[in-house]
Every structure is written in structure tokens, then in C-alpha cells.
Length: 327
Image 1: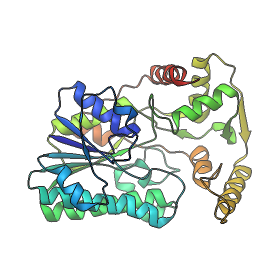
Image 2: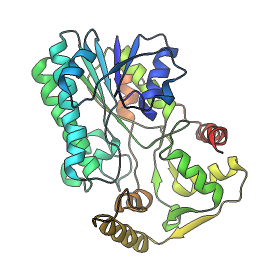
Image 3: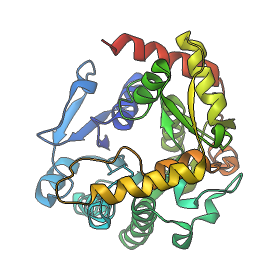
């Protein structure tokens, strides 16, 4: 039995659906307060626990042999303490529950390719360094990796770490939907003309990488996972516009102006009378202005990972989903 944590999220639900479609025995870990709409059409057993509640988590893990740890705080805004508690504390609890279960043999931990930093093309898994990381999210994910490695080594558990790049596709309300919506409205910003390049990751390719890892019986190791496609933000945005059938109209913002705006909005949102996330952050600006480009040669060689590289088809499917759910 495979347990997927964070099963109600964009990534978690997609993994659950893929595994079910490929005849895997799978159950999903969710909170009692979770929004379960992404799972409504799936024939999946749910187990209820907060990863911060050890007793409930231990019961939820019982009888499973593999855990895919997808649950995390994935955001560009929040305090160091919040990120540490969710991402480092969360993986500590999941692995401790695995140890107590007596049945779990392997863990697949979803991290992020961003732990290798940015500004370098073909960044490898070996380039991860806390000194290169400026933001709480990336630092907490690297700390979570190191914690997972230490605990799994001590407990004799097989650990594989997958580092997805920017995941997008149907079902992603947080990034994909908002990007398509703003491109449709002609209000999508491009920093420095959108010249920076990235290696994005379509959600189905991530699910394929997980299936390959399971076929290799955990395999161990650390792997970047991307589509294997290099694309600039302008090219990516123009493809979306073409599938929307609209003329590409973007807000071109110089990097110094955008970064200053991000710093200002972050400062304002720290004031007591501001709530929610700022409209712009330093991370979002840097994400659009610097190269986020990662190598997947290790995954190809050791896992046999061969991603579907049809970027046009992936963006077409994303736009079709957007249309199907938009008012």
C-alpha cells in the first residue's frame, strides 16, 4: 500500500490519480478540514491526520509499505518559523511515523529543484547549498532533505528525493490558472522582457517520474525532475496566448523597478494592519528575471526517465482546463 501525503493538493491529487490509473494500491493522507474536491471523482481510500499530530499520523501510516511525501508549505511568503515547522517538522514526523509502523520500507520525498539556486544553466543535484539560497521556502526544503537523509539512514529506510522544477498543468489553481487568466486579460507582467529561461515541469511528467521510482523499488538517490525543455518566460507566455486565441499583450517591467516594488510590498505587508500575501515579492521578481534551469541527466541515466517534451500540447491542455473551470 502506498500512502500519498497532501493528497488533496494539486500535486498530491495528480499523483493519486496517476497511481490508481496504473493499478497501484494507494491511499491518500488528508486533514479532516481539507478541501476534497480534487479527489471527488477518484476511488481512493482516505486516511485523516495532520502531519503535526503524531498519534493520528502513526495510525494513518499503519499497514503501508511506501510513503510519497508531497505535503509541504509551498509559497513565496511566510516566516522562517512557519516554513520550518511545515517542511522540516513535517518530514521529521512522517519518517518517525514510518519507523513506528514497522511496515514502511521506502519513502519518496518531493523537494524542489530550487535548492540548487538560480542563475546557472543545467544546474545539477550536486549544486545544492544553503549558502546559495535567499528565501525561507528553498532553505526549508533543503533542510528537510538533510533531515530526511539523516533519519532514514538511522532508521534503515530507503529514501529517494525527487526535486521537481516549476510544476504546472490542469488542476493548478494557484499558478497555472492565475497565469492563464492574466494573459487572457492582457495584464501578465514580464520582468526584463521575459528573457529569463526555465525548465518547467508538466504535472504528468512528475507522476511518471514517481512511477519510475516505484518501479525501481525506491532506488535511493536525489534527482532533478523537469520536462527537459528550455523555454523563456516570453515564449511560454506567448504559447499560452496563442491557445487562448488572444494577441500577446504583456506588461514589461524593468528588473530594478520590479525588485523595488517587491521589496516595498513585502515591507508593507509586515505592518500589523495588512493581511494576506503581498501582490509582488522579491522571489516572484527573481523567478521571472533569473534563469531557473536544471539538468535531468541523472534521472535519465539512473531512473530511465524520458519526459514528454511536447510543451505545446501541455499548454493547450492547461488552457482547455482553464476554460472548463472559468465562469
